[in-house]
Amino acid sequence: MKLVIQIPCLDEEETLAETVAALPRTLPGVDEITLLVIDDGSTDRTAEVAERAGVSEIVRFPNHQGLARAFAAGLERALQLGADVIVNTDADNQYSAADIPALIAPILRGEADIVIGDRDPAKLKHFSLSKRLLQRLGSWAVRQLSGTRVPDVTSGFRAFSREAALKINVLSDFTYTLETVIQAGKKLLAVTHVAVRANPTERPSRLFSGPSHYIRRSASTIVRIYALYEPFKVFSLLGGALIAAAAAIGLRFLYFYLRTGGAGHIQSLILAAALLIIGFLTMLSGMLADLIGRNRQLSEDVLLRVRRLELMLRAGSDADARQAERLQRRRRADGLPR
Image (tube, rainbow, N blue to C red; front, side, top):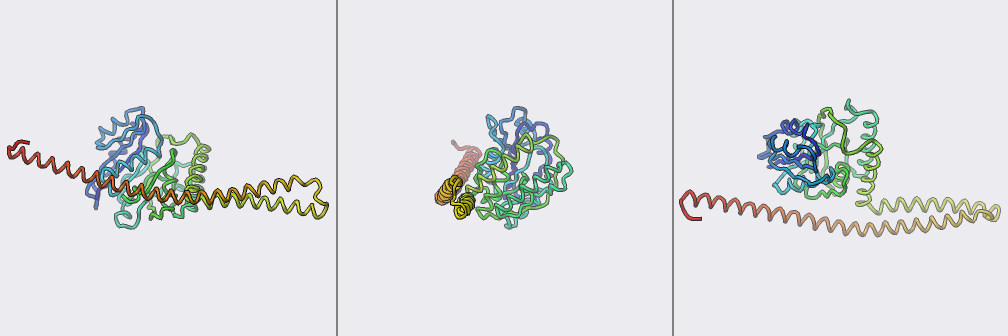
């Protein structure tokens, strides 16, 4: 059983060493632990600090690409390293590394594909009242859309099984937290949560500039990813609202038509007709998007098979290389020519 702990980083030279030092090197039920840092185009000494802290694997972006892409690159590299379980944590030492055993336990027991650490944001003293309310509202919305029961959907402290990491496709360039939960729910992955401890943060978030920015980006991410997996529902809701508005305006025109002959209200009739047409076109667009969505599911199945095949070939190539190296050592030990 191999565990890879990945840490997406952006200019984290001040806190990274402390974060890495707290991570476990051995765990019950785990044969090997590898630390992986994804340097998202840092302009400070983040990569150097990671090397000095003993991180064996570092993925470096030449420029800043965003947290979501750094997270996705970490999953890909962890799979290439042969990870059976992948834990994602933040570089600012926000999460207690001592909770990693509890985080991976449901996966080791075969009870879950994804485990998310629940910080219980309502009780975090370093969270402002507005941030607590936003956390609660956002988590509720994602639970409704994903069909999961995750109480803290924005937590970055989470564990993935190998199968879950293979199936997750991060499309957002903003944050992976909301998208991966909705995807997991739509792909019928087993998602659970465990209580974890959170340390006070030493700096403001670099992901967003303020609450309004976070709300806008998060809302757009939620709508896009839900529309991607449930296009017919989304377009049917929009089309139905337009048709209902057309019906209401049409009934208003009919009322005045029966009472006064409709004089002076012809604009209502034109508006009702326009909304009715747009509503039906919107619903037809939903049907077309749903058909395209079926094709996307087939593409994702093909991508999953390709990923598995690539990992199998890579594992075979690595095994051949190790075997060749052992033979070379044996020949040198026996004094034979190469």
